[in-house]
Amino acid sequence: MAKYERRITGDFSQLCSFCHEAILHSSGSASYEDGSEYTLGDVRVAVNVYERYSIIGSNRVSMNVTIVGEGDNLFLSAITSGGSQAMFFKLNTFGEGSFLDTLIDAVEKHYPRR
Image (cartoon, rainbow, N blue to C red):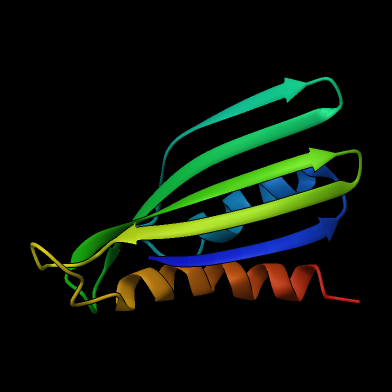
């Protein structure tokens, strides 16, 4: 499992769309599995799940992307899982890290830290 978390100032819908496009365009095998959006007062939450085939690991890995926003204060959390071929412990996490890196690279370039 690999994880990336980041606070961002921006527009909630734009960040959701940006992450969605960045993930789907990162690989020919990347797919959107399902998602959910919820609003409670001024707080918005989007949870999306993606999957792709990892050539290095010869298996599929998934990534859960959660975005929480209140006004222009946003929080992004992305967690990958799967990819291991062992029964009781993880042997191969290359695919998870690689899948997550595609989102990290895109976010860090588009939303530079100040």
